[in-house]
Image (cartoon, rainbow, N blue to C red; front, side, top):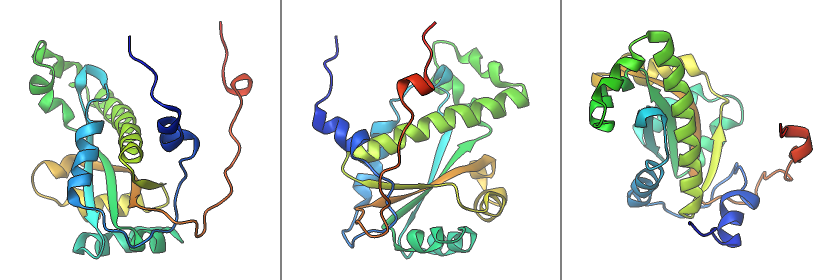
Length: 202
């Protein structure tokens, strides 16, 4: 039986974690970005379909400059300042990798042959994976600034629809800044629903 993680770990991942709007100048190495991916990938998805895809944009990169015009309002400034920004996407053609990812039943690829079912599973499982990603980033010592305030159609056109290869099949879900956050523009923690307000036991 697995033992519970420490209270400190729960604080870092959930209770004390915040959505950050400003960043200090601490450098975040690419090795840490890769470590986040390598940790989060173990989270479960339907038939191990793993449809989430990640486009990482380091600060001052050409890719970051292409993204900034498509960020809405104050999200542009906070994105410009972050050490790393990641466009969290999903692959609409994820099912093509099922024979490798689900080798004991490679025929599971056909479960997703229907396009509406494939779209539904790509979005749902990709979103699930992206939550693992946020938890992994926090667990490895980074702060996160998740955002949905951007022009999704424009981001898809800019980065995916005209891309070469498999990236043509990627579609944006949400965007997350990564780094070491500061207290600047940090809101007071908002309330959450109680168990009684959000849950029912039948």
